[in-house]
Length: 250
Ligand SMILES: NC(=O)c1ccc[n+]([C@@H]2O[C@H](COP(=O)([O-])OP(=O)(O)OC[C@H]3O[C@@H](n4cnc5c(N)ncnc54)[C@H](OP(=O)(O)O)[C@@H]3O)[C@@H](O)[C@H]2O)c1
Image 1 (cartoon, rainbow, N blue to C red):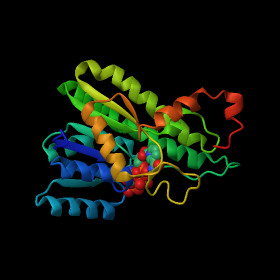
Image 2: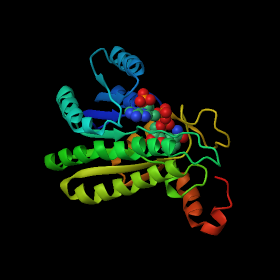
Image 3: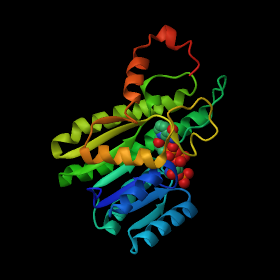
């Protein structure tokens, strides 16, 4: 089955979930552009995609999402190079390990910059373009971590909670113009971000996550936990009163 998308852009595609989404899309015949900072990884992945496709199906651009001024111009350049744009996935993300007694604004602000500011810098111009053209799908990769203020990593939770609110507000703005915005909240996925962390459960592969995420993108889901069993867990966690939640070291 084809992906249902003809021209896609994946931001944060040099590893993990973004890489798996880009590979999955290309395998289904979608022309795809990959963005991240690591040129060597992007070159290797696009080379493998193009070799498997037997044509130039993937291209890449090196970009740091903290360079927010570059986003609108790069989006236009990529849309031209691909021959169109009907899907944009924002998968770029950063989760610094933070000790329980650590209060480091440098680390925290960097997470906010990559996970939230970068998303706004990219998805505002994308939403405007899709709105003007009357179609298009945006997928934002949030996290179950955005559903509560966890003591273990305050800024990471904040960046994801902010992303969820931003995506919802953007959806409410552009849905009437024919634009679909999908909020994805993964649980634990086996990527560089989770490698070496303790206490992981229900770990799924990046390929499995990509498959589920693209199914929701095709369907035009509003919001989805990945995998779906997190919906029930998070419904319970969201109901835990604050005076109990603060005693849990999560
Ligand atoms: N793994 C999990 O269990 C899990 C759970 C919930 C949500 N998520 C979310 O899923 C998304 C993907 O994470 P992952 O697990 O696939 O981790 P990952 O393998 O570390 O991938 C992160 C991606 O973001 C890119 N990135 C980071 N900083 C960037 C920057 N300044 N500019 C441009 N690109 C940047 C990285 O590329 P470069 O380093 O090459 O720039 C890489 O492609 C993130 O938003 C993460 O928060 C992950």
